[in-house]
Image (tube, rainbow, N blue to C red; front, side):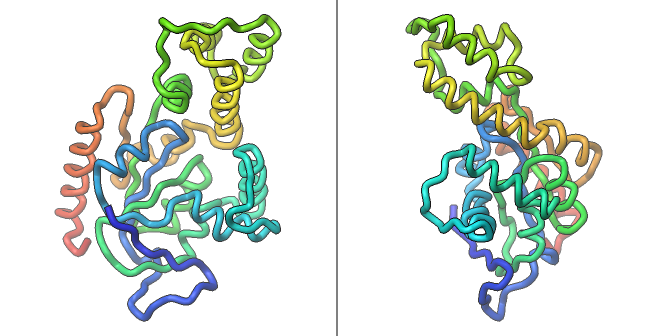
Length: 249
């Protein structure tokens, strides 16, 4: 897997660079823990700087932060939420103003939520979308590392009450009980659950499906039902079909 350069608005670019709006791009869509990193590694396609780097390079400096300055996930969510309020297309707006040196397949990780995907669908007309989906409890489990129910940790009543409040609208009571049975320390479980809850608050997991359902430019993968090898095969087969339709890619 090799890295490709992305030239953001206002940055110097080489003569061979072209607007990303004119180039085919494979975009991964999905929240933390759906399996994007695993799929990227297995595909081995050239990748653009990912979502986190774009936020570091373009979004945070707008609000007085510099790359490398410590920010926890909640602080980053607050700043990216502010950016989306000012620019509803979010990270997709940054991509639509950026330039690349042409190559294919070229992969970007990743877009989230209905507004970003809708903007990209309209303003990146050569792009294709692979939407990775998984339940919130599965994403939580992957963030923690697979839990072993054999090694349980006691959770005090006040700790369980705090987790129940955090899990509201994210996990069902039965799913929370399952998560508690994994045996993780309360603080670790709460920290990862907070990430899942904050993402759900900022990005509706079903939003991308609403925008892309039925589009020939979208492929949906259930990462709970498919093995990584099956996901890779599905993406490669789908891209071969796209290449047959558009051989210039």
